[in-house]
Image (cartoon, rainbow, N blue to C red; front, top):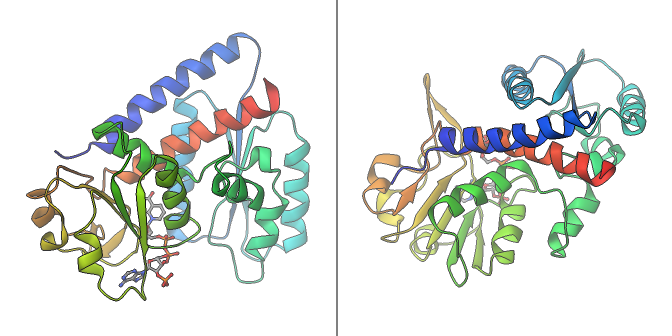
Length: 279
Ligand code: NAP
């Protein structure tokens, strides 16, 4: 089975849209402010896509664009202003940032209740403690994709490749919460193949083209490929798709798997943030 991220994300956006429209009938406004610094081409594409989908869901979306030489203090004072603005439910600062801007300072300045990316230490801590929190969009989307195949994950062995704050670590927390037995592998893991072969659920979030081979897959596994890698003009994932799809019970394609679901989860988080501050 190929997990259709486009279809599933479309369904999720429809659900969000219904809720947003109902809130609008009561005079409530849901707003997402995205700060974009510089001209990094992938960021320009991501931000445009996020704005398009937000509008589709009835969410007011604004892109605040700065040139790459903006000072850190100017960005921090904009974030303070957005934190206070009642029409702004969610704030996202598109990463990566120019070198002279401290990422940690920027993330820490965002009101945790408006932190749609789930990167603020308070949200990270709440997730790690098993409390209610805003969860980073990509792992949240991956969980949604996994659950589209199997709802009860209890007792499954999940193997996550990658330990970034963006993907691997929050993915592990989410799957622990689902009562999986979780292994996190990374660049220093000795035998990646044998770790992968134990996985009922395999999430690859590395950024290494087709690192995971077909014979690394346990028969019947659910395989989620987060990686985005370019081979000439072609985008491929971290998993050898054709060889893997024969053995896996379900697999996400790249593109068309995790990517669209990440954006849908951003909208879900924006709505969550609105509810946390307004309802
Ligand atoms: P990252 O911060 O660079 O982290 C990569 C992780 O992979 C690190 O933990 C690293 O280990 C590990 N790693 C690197 N090479 C490895 C190897 N040969 N074997 C095992 N582990 C290895 O990357 P990220 O931000 O998590 O992103 C990962 C990928 O997901 C990228 O391709 C990115 O473009 C993609 N992505 C996709 C979406 C989406 O919506 N589809 C969203 C975000 C990111 P160490 O910690 O030991 O260095």
